[in-house]
Amino acid sequence: MAKNLNLRLIKQRESYSLKEITELLKVHLRTVQAWKQEGLPTINNEKPYLVMGYELKDFLSKKFAKRRIKLQANEFYCTKCREAVRSTDNQVWLQTSGKSIGKQGFKELVIKGICEFCNSKLNRFSHSGKLEEIKNTFDVVDFGGLINE
Image: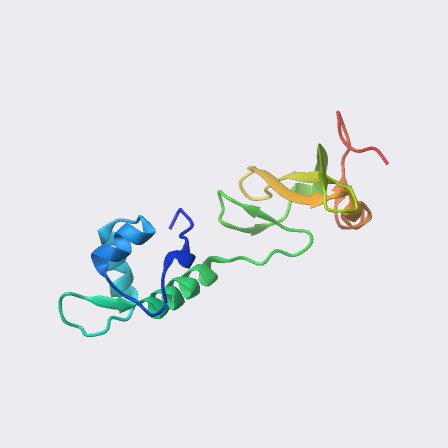
């Protein structure tokens, strides 16, 4: 599942055919058929297959929850490895976008690193209010237009 589905479009008390699910969520019919094979419950196991909205929502919510990865303070999500990883030698670079975040006026920070396994670029977003925590967690390397403190 490469794209995020808008589960708020699903009405809980309505029943949907597989074709209606494809049109509602803008996915291919084969995708919905695969969900049925994976355990998407149908009202009767007779054609036309009908799925209750609350069961569809529950099934997809659980499916998305399995993919979610909780990161520790010193970890990044590597899109190439598809898992939580640390930066090589725990070194990171800070870059500010200049945008203000929240009522406190903190500046947006991008914490940049390199994957210790595949050497891909890693990014994690934070704000200047957490600068001390970032400095305690990572070995911060400053250069160029980065924050100097």
